Amino acid sequence: MRILVLGGSWFLGRAVARAALDRGWEVTVFNRGRSGAVPEGARTVRGDRTVAADLARLAGEGPWDAVVDTSASEMAPRDVLAGARLLEPVAGRYVYISTVNAYRGWPDEPLTEDSEVLDGPPDADAEYGRLPEDWDGPDWYYGRQKAGAERAVTAAFGEDRAVVLRPGVILGPGEYVGRLPWWLNRAVRGGRMLAPGAPDKPIQPIDVRDVATFALDQGAADRGGAYNCVAPIGRETMSDLLTACVLTTGGDAQLVWAPDKLLLDNDVKQWTELPLWRTHAGVWKIDSTRAQAAGLVCRPLSETVTDTWAWLSDGGTPVQHPRWAEHGISQEKEAVILAALGR
Image 1: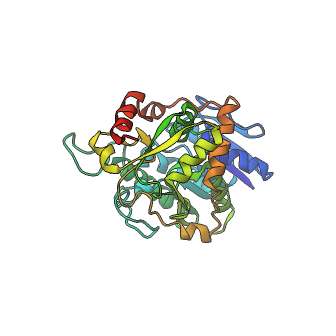
Image 2 (image 1 turned 90 degrees about the vertical axis):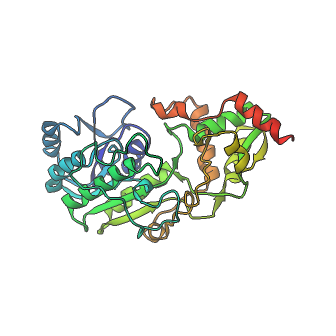
Image 3 (image 1 turned 45 degrees about the vertical axis):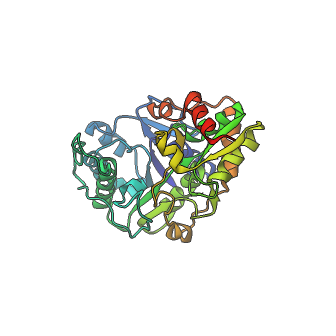
């Protein structure tokens, strides 16, 4: 296989490139060279995806059996469309990494691949879907942009040659968002450790390496389609995650579980101050049966925790990203809630 990875220098893109090289595939990566490092053995082409001349030059480096697009998270659909059209003559298929945010019902409703996808035309610009400042409903802007980008890829490559992967939360070595690293570092600090919600609350994060493997498998398959890339519903819980963090780090932290209402009453920001905690009914009810039937295999969450801690302990540092600073509750606020629990 000859593949092109759009991105390729950090987290998922790097994992895709590394896994392809491990298979003995010929790998080209295309990025601006501003962050991260490309795995040794990959051929690098520098350029900006929003510059037509750079895309045309990239197309001249082909052909490829497949494109795996890991770097379009902040790109407008029309920019994804322009790139896909230029690459279509020189690539067999296109694997686009989208998100469950593209569904109208996330995070409030259970989802399958047949759930309604948000509106978003393939030629939309970056302003499409922006909401008024006084809007207090669901924030669909990001989802609309990603839904439009999905349609852009399908418009360029056709349904049989376009693959859309919709991950939920991706964790693992190299994580730049800071969710799992925050919990690991909190476990190291020890003491009474605030744990959110119910211990048996199911969660569905997926390991970055499992997304990478599935993306490559779909790039090599003779079919298109859309797949939810999440761990099986109900397989693991918040207690499984936090217990693994405590055991892996060897700390003496004692988990103290706080009911959702107490956390809400103390204005704890969902999803960020206590990472992965969210009260919405559908946030961890995403069906991935179709993806599993197509070959998706998700390693145990404890393995993801162990390997992420090993990466951090070995001096691993994530690519700098503003989302990192959003995660984690202050020690002072945590202490107030722990005191209210009285145990």
